[in-house]
Length: 217
Image 1 (cartoon, helix red, strand yellow):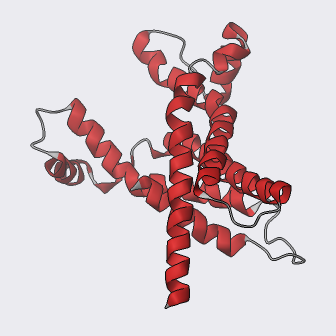
Image 2: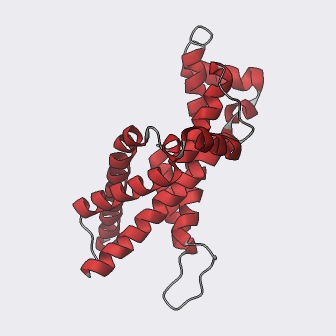
Image 3: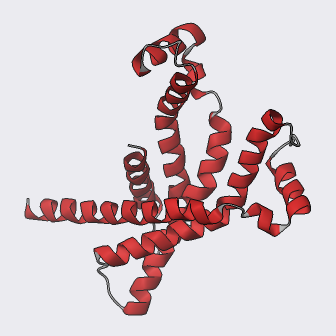
């Protein structure tokens, strides 16, 4: 569900912000970068309550009879705002990844068209381009993910407590070097890179089907 919301938000915002050749850009930033960030925010806001309820149900299994019961009790006893507790740190992690992922995908598609002089891009090529975008965005934003995890486990495991993300990044860099900021990147890419490629391939395939149906209608 999160991917569907993300792709729909990206497509909608990107169309609104994109300018035609010869026109002045509507923003000083690339449209795909802003649209990607909006997609990440939209998806997180829509799916965050479900993630929070799922986490609470898993941790406090004896308290709730099911997911729906957990949702009702959280809203009734703690208020609707409780469903979004911890949203800000999640957005801080999601926005850079989503923005770089969609920007890298858009730039890679444009580079492919320019290099091979082909307007249409097939499913396999889209899969590879999407995977490349996933690899770029994962590598670019992975230090933020490492810093976030260090901040989460610090107080629990008795390790150093960090003031903020910048403090965490600086401390990891000082203590472990550059390698410390990318520890665990390989396994992360093995999960995220294929998922990104498949997601973009399905997105483009669905767009082609819908466009063809509209033209036939």
